[in-house]
Image: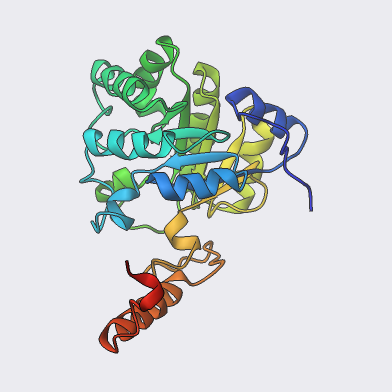
Length: 272
């Protein structure tokens, strides 16, 4: 197993590019709150994504669409307070950048000023180029996101694998090259064929992070609540659950309830 660069005091966009050059895989996870972000950061994760997936795993919405810019800023603030080492990327939520580059810039500036994050992430390719360029013109690092783009779920109508047909695959590669050309520092590819990911990775100089996109990506990202087994109603092929906190937490809560009911808690040593 290749060890991570534990001597790095702060991961930056330049560090990620160097990791790609040297063949060191990039580890990325989501976080939405101070306590979780602190644990993840102290474990030496490379990138923390304050994802709009908070709409799903924190707020219980069926899609990412309802979460607002104010809510994303709140989650971003909570995470940044905890992080010392990782690069923190905040998703711009649905409706905060599509179709209006001036609003996109205002949204990105708010995120950067009010959270202290290191970068923002936007979904889409050619359709959002003007927004990306305007954000980049302000000196704000941007990470792209192609393939399955959850903010467009109503357009797709399904969460199936994207870019399996040549036309869509060609567009994805074209969009990836375009996002690199205009200045994005990295790219997330979600739920696309592994062979297409390998082609994109070889075509780009910037790091490519995959989620359900195969092993050829320069790094991988998962949703914290999914890989920890907190969520149980989401089981795509690409998800590896490293533990089952749903059962662990449930068992602990049941023990606590039992201790309270039987008057075992608090005992003499646990009171004043």
